[in-house]
Length: 561
Ligand SMILES: [Mn+2]
Image (cartoon, rainbow, N blue to C red; front, side, top):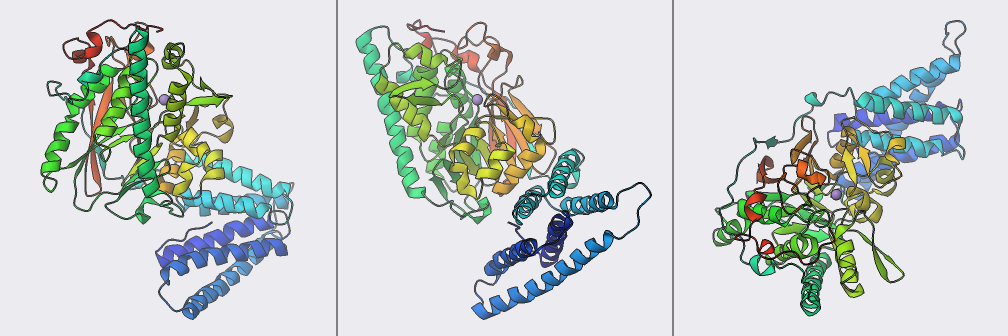
């Protein structure tokens, strides 16, 4: 429940605030009963046990017990003092026509709010959760308790807009000016043989679909091996800091990359591709990822380690989904599985109903085009592939995910520790949300009839800080400029990158609204905890050309779009 600071003075203030806060709730119904007292005593105990159990892990058991008991006695004294003080307030005189109970409640409210003000977002959330539990501790929820809770939640939400992010330390992340990367370099050799449209000839098509299906199976096999090795490693881990340096592993649907001490990294980040194969090819050429990887493997001690992250949404919208972007992304992963990370987007989502695979996102152009010609086995395999794709990657204190943070209600109900990121409701919502300019989006507004929802800056901050991170990089949203600094001046940073689009990109249908977007990708240079983010436009145009792109050598033979 309450995680105490490692600084003893801060921890004491936290505990006193915690006691004031909870006893206020306990008194809000006009009666401080035994169940409520017992609840607070146990809450104090749990916080002390967690703090000193860890701190004095190596000390003899008796010493540990003794320390915790002494502190328990001290804080219980503080609890009695606080409760007396609150009860005394009920005898204070008030102006005529004012109700004393209202006065006490509003005073208490302010005091609680002040306590909350001294805490960071995730600690605030801990207190609000504890209050909720306490309200129910005596068996029924009193209207005054609920009113206090609701008012504080509203105050907190309103206040977050005023919170001074400038005062908090900015994470060591700098966004550089847009840079230009030329596209004259070599494409990875494995791409050219893959650049074949699905054929109208049935036998050829069958062989193509089967090759794509086999590739998907190989990817699943590789992911499964990583998963077997990393299974269970996030259980009980509250923050990325608790994970050992220098290790990379996949637990469930969450990739963890803990940088090796002293190692520099160069991370290429590619946002939504949506069937724009020319964008993918251009990005691979411009980033020179495979050239850099080859050089790194020769001189690992002198060069930054290259990583490549795909943020999901490979299919639909553009002309080259299964036979283009998805095929090439999977092959890219298989070519360098220790350096390439393929995350899942909301378009990588099918439903299985009575043995049939159905699309879950509409319109689903890739499915519509292939459904009449590809068999159940094909879609069953890709359904399984999509289900198996990881959703989150945590590199040091940077979080990479398709869309962003979960709604408050889902986060509260399902999140316990880092392993909770693997639970379906969280995975689902991490692929659907969009950041808002508002500080907080109220719960009511997060409940939408569609999967898409909005989150506010402080909700993003609460989520990202809970993971132990400070920066979130996501795609999902068709931002016209291709790269957007959504939250760029607070203690938590959030950026959007979109890699599909282009006004004159022949990969897109003529009337696609993606043509309004300038596709961009990112290079993140990382060293010693600090990162430089460099956005760059994708030169898709160079690859809308039969000379550089096999897909343009022959007309598309299937054309549902
Ligand atoms: Mn999306």
